[in-house]
Image 1 (cartoon, rainbow, N blue to C red):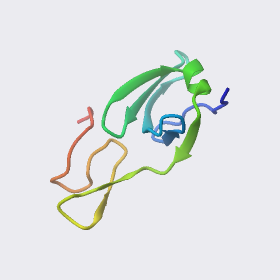
Image 2: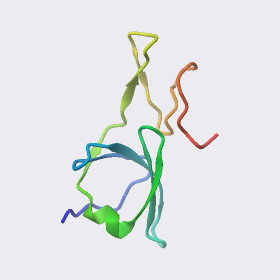
Image 3: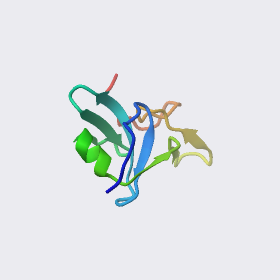
Length: 93
């Protein structure tokens, strides 16, 4: 059984069992609920008990490849390219 510390908002993690990367975008300690956003924009809610059973590795915020350029663009924590013309996977305005 894994033993992760409490989630940190705006931090990225990799689930080492599935290989999926995600960011913690919300954590309610009183409710024990965690909201995460996967790299593809999918949102998921977890409870704290489930969080503590996951095999997680903290990671740096990912970068994404801009197909129209040979440069890599920085991926902000809400899933939007820093420059215009990229995709927007965020639910936040």
